Length: 139
Image (cartoon, rainbow, N blue to C red; front, side, top):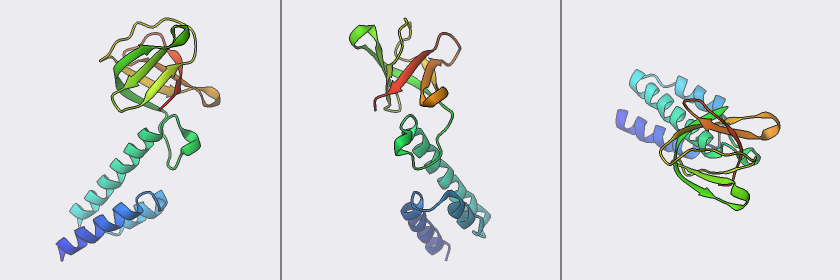
C-alpha cells in the first residue's frame, strides 16, 4: 500500500509540479496522512521550486514561479569583453555581463551575490562585502 502511494505521489508531483499552482501543490501535500510521506512531499516541492526559481533569476519575462531577491554562487570564470567589461560565469551555469564601467578584482572561486536593483536591473557584489557592479544576465 505504501509503495503504491509513493509511486503515485511521485507520478503526480513530477507531472504537476510546474503545471499546478503552488497553492494546489501545498494543499495536496497537506492531505498526505503519513508524516514521513507528507514531509517527503513538502521537501520535493520545496526543492523543485527553489531550483526553478534560481534557474529563472534574471529572466523575468520567462518567469513561471516566484524568483528570489538574490542568489549566491561561486564564480567559475571571468572573461573580458569589449570596452573592458567583464563577463562572469557562475557555478550554476548563469552568465552575467557587466553593464557599467568600473574595475573589479574578482577571480574564479570567489563567492558573489547577485541581487535585484530598481527598474529590473541587477547588481553583483562579493559575498564578503566590497564594490558592486551593475550586471545583465546573458544566459
